[in-house]
Image (cartoon, rainbow, N blue to C red):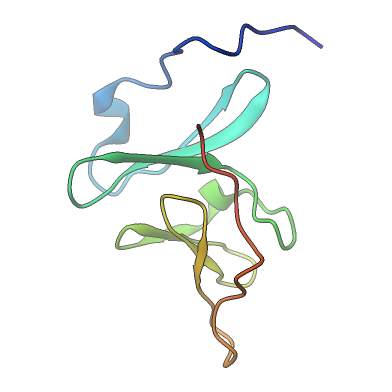
Length: 101
């Protein structure tokens, strides 16, 4: 494993790589991340792994500012919180995809 300096800024992507509805999968500091541009023009970056079945979220689809997992349809916002569930009980509050800090 490579050691990385943690308290520095690293460039994740060029602005034109994240245009429109694009989902960008990128490995940074040895970890998989998902980056997208929200409707207000800001960026979101969360772990590229659904916490339920570990499917890469980059294989999913955009639904507004949310990314939906391809496997079960759980939806995650830009903070990594699960905000949508296709099941009747609503989104599970204990499920999240870690956001970049």
